[in-house]
Image 1 (cartoon, each protein chain N blue to C red):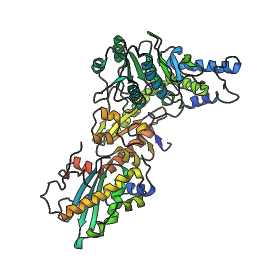
Image 2 (cartoon, rainbow over the protein chains, first blue to last red; image 1 turned 90 degrees about the vertical axis):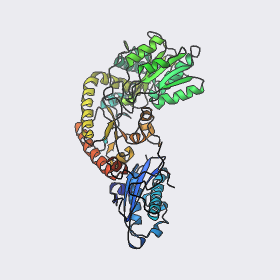
Image 3 (spheres, rainbow over the protein chains, first blue to last red; image 1 turned 120 degrees about the horizontal axis):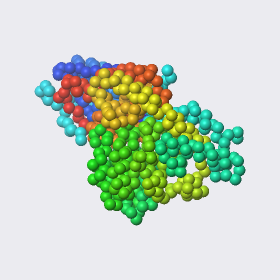
Image 4 (cartoon, rainbow over the protein chains, first blue to last red; image 1 turned 60 degrees about the horizontal axis):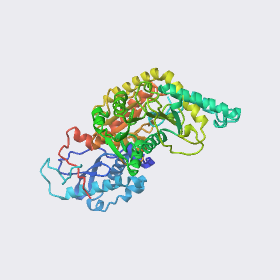
Length: 140
Length: 405
C-alpha cells in the first residue's frame, strides 16, 4: 500500500463536502461510477444554480483512502465554477495537489470520470424517478 | 501503552527478551561463537553442544526425535526442501502431489515449479469456513500420489485442519504428509509420537525467535522419509542441508521453543480471551463478518470483513495500529487474498477483510484502544461510503456505472 501523502491524509481525515443531496431534487445531478480493476466507487452530486454554476457538490467514496481524498479535493475545486468551465477539468490537477503516486493514478482518474458522468446526467433529459441514471454493467 | 499498537503477530513476532539474551551469548568473542563442525577444538565442541541442546528443545516441543530436526533458513526453505526434496526423490513411485488453494505462497509457488518439472498437482478447494474436507482429500488420492502438503493453521484466517484424521487417511494410502506448521508451532499442542505427519515446517520468527532460522522435521518413523537436498556443500545436517550452522540463530530458536512449551497453555488461554474481547467489541458495529471457522482456529488470528468499506482505507484511518489486509506478502500488490477467494468470498467481502493477529505482548488496554479506534474509523468510513448507503436502502436504484469513460 502506498503511504498517504500529507495533503492526501488531510483530505482523507477531514473530507470536504462529504455526504449526499436528495438525488430526486430537480437541481441535483447524481453520478455513481466505478473503477472495475480496483473496485473503487465514487458518487458525485452537483447542485446546479443560476446561470449554470455549481452551487454545491457532495461526494461519497468506497475504496482506497486515495479515492476518498480525490473525491474531496474534486468537490472543493469545482464548487462555484460554471458547468462549461469544469467540463475542461483534468485529473492532473488532483495528481499534483495530492502527490498521487503512479500506483494510485486510477483514483484520480475515477474522480474525473465521476465529474464527466455527472455533467452528462445534468445535460440529459430527466429520467423517471428511481430509474437508473446510467447504463450500467454488472461486475463479475 | 506504547503506540503504535502491534497487532500483526501472524506476520512476525518480536523476539522474546530471553531469546535475545541467549542469541547474544553465541556471537561475540566471549560467547559460544565456534563452528559446530570444528569439533577438533573446544570452541567448536561448545558450539556443537549448544546446537544439540537447541535441537532437543525444538524436538521436545513437537514430540519429535532430535535427530529428525533439519535446520533451515526458515519455513520457506523448509517447504521448498520438503516438496522439491520428496518429489525429486520419489520420481519412480509417482509424480502426483495434493495441496490446497489456501496454502501459503511458499508452498503454492513451489508447486508451480514442480509442475514445470513434470509433476501433477491437485489444488483442493476449501469449504467456505476454510476447512479442507477429508472426503475431498480421499477423492484426490491416486496410486501415484507421493505427497500431501497442507498447512496446520492458515496464516490469514487462523483456521486449523484436523491433522490426525488427514494423516491417518494419507498414511493408510501409502503417501507422505507434509505440514506447514509456521502458524501453529508453539501455539497448539503437538505430539508427533502419535500424530501421523511425515514432514513438518517451522519458522522461529513466528514464535518469538529471530528471523532467518527455521527447521524441517523429517520423520524417521514409521518410515524414514527420503528426500533430495537443495543445497550441497559441507555435509551438515546429515547431508540434507549444507552450510555452516548459524549457532546464534539456532540457540535462539531453541530457547523460543523451550519457552513456548512451558508457557503455551496459559498464553493461548490469555490470547483467546483477548481475541474474544476484540471480536465482541467490534461486532457491536453490525454487518461485521468473521472469515473462517468460528470454532476450529488458533487464538491469535482474527480475520474480519467490515461491510461497506475497504480494508485499506480502514488501515489508513488507523495509523497507530499495525494490522494486515490479506497476508503481508500480498499487501504490496492489488491482488485480493487468494485464501478468501478460494473460500468463496465475494469481491467486497475480500476488499473489506482485515486481519488482527495477537500475541505474547498484547495487553488488554491495547485491545480496548483498538476497539474504540477501529469502531470510530469504521463508522466514519461507512458514513462516507456510497456502498453502505445503498445497503441501508437509500438511493437503492442508483446503479454504479462501471464502464464510464
